[in-house]
Length: 316
Ligand SMILES: NC(=O)c1ccc[n+]([C@@H]2O[C@H](COP(=O)([O-])OP(=O)(O)OC[C@H]3O[C@@H](n4cnc5c(N)ncnc54)[C@H](OP(=O)(O)O)[C@@H]3O)[C@@H](O)[C@H]2O)c1
Image (cartoon, rainbow, N blue to C red):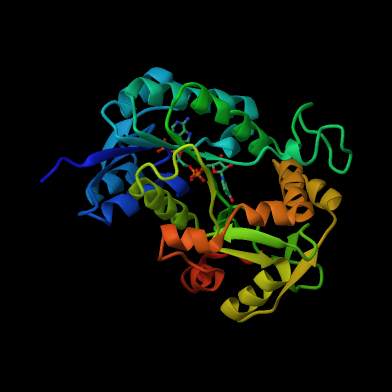
């Protein structure tokens, strides 16, 4: 049997990378092997991946030499950065550069870079509909990722640029689930108006990425977007009401109000939602559900995700 092609996965113990590692391991005859990259090979999550059959290696995206070692001999790499770890777009750019340089040195045949749109293409810094953040961004965690795209291209790394969507797991872990209002009723509060928010089960990102790798060179040099479903806040509230057996309403708020909520990253999130709302067709148009399902036939809908996950949503 031919030797398996190694896919080295950054963020393997997390949402995107974890889904990819499991997708590779769940397809033992697919011709690929999973190399899971973590900062701590002794963690429970790392050991769990090893038990499933992944090769687990240590690297830190802040340390280019460790990435070069971790990418060595790989056919492909999955690259993702961790904005919410320190809210620093500058660090994201440095870390993406480190990954691109390591991918170049390893001579990989395919990289997927998990990126986003540069929102300043649609809302230049001079546009006062939303505040400029840190002096140079509108949506920092989008714009910085996009700024890093050229590093992969300039170095000649064969790259697919992957546009992901809002994880439905944000309803569980990110405080984006239904909250009890002063009237005691549950409400989902987003500044999305009546516009559609592309969402996805985070596990499906890795499955779609695996679908891209399996297509060989087809998506190299291309930007592809994925989503499980495009839903309005009202549609999400109706689905939640059904799944939870408790009424959930959609509470549309102005983006300014959302930005003022004060949690870490609220301004960036407020701008992000506003971008998705005000440029609904651009944003949804870049994330075809049908295309995502062609990469990953098991793609979940919001209803199917809720069937397995609604009991994990904290109802604050
Ligand atoms: N939340 C959303 O709705 C959403 C949607 C689309 C895209 N995103 C983007 O997704 C990105 C994060 O990806 P994710 O959600 O898959 O991450 P995650 O689940 O938060 O974490 C992924 C893993 O990354 C590893 N990690 C963290 N810092 C690292 C470092 N310095 N070097 C190497 N590994 C490191 C950690 O593993 P170890 O501890 O094992 O090292 C962690 O388990 C963000 O940039 C965000 O903008 C988020």
